[in-house]
Length: 310
Figure: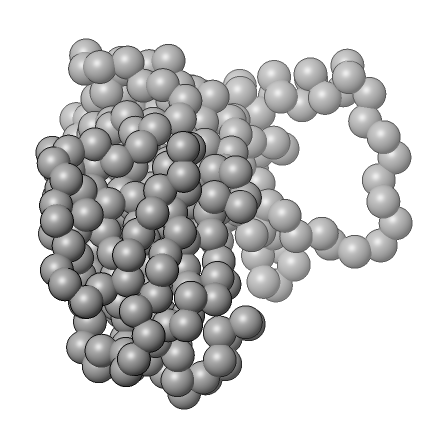
């Protein structure tokens, strides 16, 4: 199976952050940094990309291809809406190794992958690529390349072609139709800034997943393999708080196939703009394993504001 954009980007960011060990290099002067960036930008001219934007590209160069710093350039301008920092973008991506042009994965055989263009995101685009994309229009095709070190210690590079297929603004708060919750569920109270608190019901916890929309949004429905930007708070069944994006001052982004099953099942199909109360039994949460401040066998309560998603 070909790797997804998420896996490609995560691996690249990890490699970019690794150090080869030894003494720290001497400080680089601004003049040499500028020269390095200019040389990297010029090196992109050695790469040939063929194919129409939106379709899987062919990427060729005189292998091995070497580049001293990250660089990106627009290959084809888009004609859709302007791409802004802070949006959720859906993109197709293909990556090849600079060593020999070997395929490193891509998304064109399936659905586009979504990324939140925010410094709050745990997995975002490399800065050179981000700078090339923001301010362009949907439909833009961008070439990116950067150095990396192989497991063998050999210097190499990674080359991407990215097509931005769509964008979505991230909401400030849930927006839609309020829903009266079913009887017997924890009571949710919102502070002036929208942060939720709960009053637990006591008694035995439900053994099945409970999915109770409190607000039904009007945006696109999120999918079980999509990306979501959300504010959320979590409590144990007795009302003990264990996690909240509100305490960190910003929403979080995550793939719905990379979270506990109760979130995947409970949020998939919910429209953007929704606020959802989830009660997650242990078998759809962390099971019989302790997880930080969450004891083994815990039933979990969440209130999730879906601010963007795909």
